[in-house]
Length: 231
Image (cartoon, rainbow, N blue to C red; front, side, top):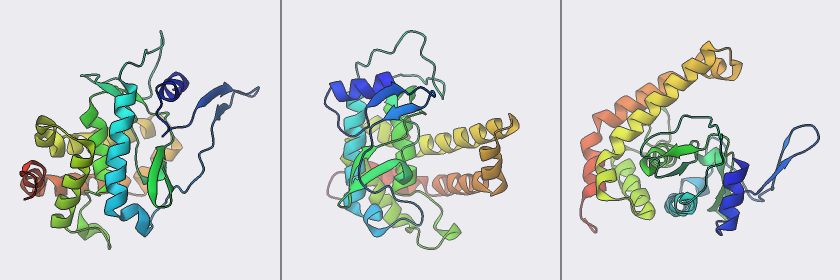
């Protein structure tokens, strides 16, 4: 992770902290990035079109900056690498891991889940979190389906997402949620109390509800993603 962060700085990407190794107690030393990291319920600035577009641009810049990263020999990853390994995926980009200044997303934090993978694996999760692609019936204030479709297209355009990835995006969001649910249960089964608490709180059920919502309206989302510009 530190090698990646230092690579990002070396190639001019400013949207991540630099790594400075460990202190005498084995704790990681990272740059502090000033700004606001929103929690839930999200503040208005984190739900704006400008924030969504900015996250898409920042994600594209991050991915592009990871191309050419020389993975250190013997490197291990929190999540297993996925094929094709086009970039180094962040693995957990969400509002709670995004630094805002003056209402604009300027940096990502919490890079411990980085792993090689295809661009769309990260794009799908960021779309889920920032659009967001959640069932509007499960929580007050979530955008309705047509608004989700509009915002999904805005995000894909900001990222400059290619045609084949647009066609695969909704399926990938669902696959990403299934992966997350499986990871939660694997960790809880291994004794991780934090993940056990998430399951006890019903977080895995919410992800299943959202995955079913995305499947239900897949045609609407795909039409928005693939319509000619201006329609």
